[in-house]
Length: 502
Image (cartoon, rainbow, N blue to C red; front, side, top):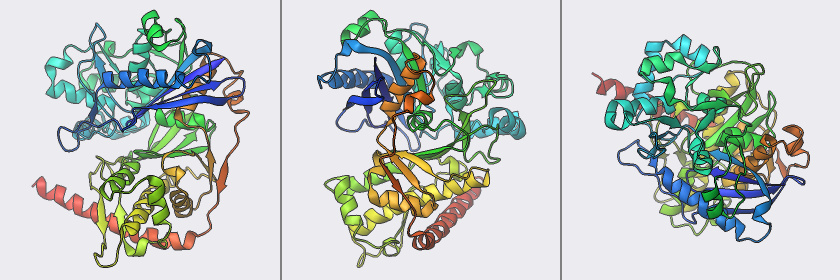
């Protein structure tokens, strides 16, 4: 059986077709060729059009068919991975009512903080495992407060992957993991949170029907099948946010196992079997793909909004020919980037920094000494140091990885970045060729029972490379200098906020 995986990213759509008998990718494609823009009407806002996602998904699927490496009629199940924490709202006719407010949008921070204080910190942390923060429920509350005419038309609120499944099947449903990432799920009651619904004044009818992650979410409709050159009735059997799905794609399913990714944002994601939480909600536990009410499996997620997006910005602004060319130049510069320091936090409120927006910063830039090669290296080191900063928070909460798994994608394609990451965190990294769309396809295979168990979906998976720490002392010194800059900027931002509220 062939399996189709769809990965709805911020920048583009990637799809892969995987042979369930070998667990290998047969063909893959991406669409569009240029990065999908983020709509930022105001500072701190970030939106995308769900119908544009759908158009791009169709084009990506047709493009992978055009490889002629398989028969599309042999595809037997579909899996979906998607950018987390977004909000899609539709009316009773399944029409999208507004752009999706996506993961890096910061407009609902204050709304989430008020909910945290009013519901009660202890109750939120013990039952939701998080502050309502800037997550999907708070974004929906923003619509209720600021766009009441739209809110009154809402029939269902969905995560981005639920929307994609709706377009494929005509069915609207969701799962535990999606609701937990939206901060709708009460882990103590094992149900939608009445505290969240009551505080925000949401009807429970807004929440779609709830299924396990590996389920039949509906079957491909005849009209969509005809457009996509697929069989009518193919089931959608898996939906997961991009980070739980990235962990699945790396066979990170058991307590103590840890995955990482460094795309537009950067994430370290560790699995726990305890209902634990960070007292400051800087790292966030959600239901993992194999979570159930009688078997706790949480994904403890450290997210840094500003990682690969900074690397892309630097590439564009300094006219680098390619990421490979940037890496080649940067490798000529010594560890520490000749004293240049860069903070990568320029993509909205950072949960790891208590939802502050401190912006991206360059320090010690010497116009007579530094070249763009120094900037290229300082960018990658700054991103690696942000990971180290967040990993130390995870360590303080009991997560101590002995090894981290990552896909050979995005910034982990850079030997320089991987070296900086490994040495800054003092943790080995195993690199794999799987990516999110392959993970989504394997998830579909688990859902359709093409494999006897989740573990059986990865029997042929082997690490392509392992990178060990070799220069920890040099990177530790550079990190401590970088951290000093970060702490100064955090203090400056806090002082500015105090003055603004006087």
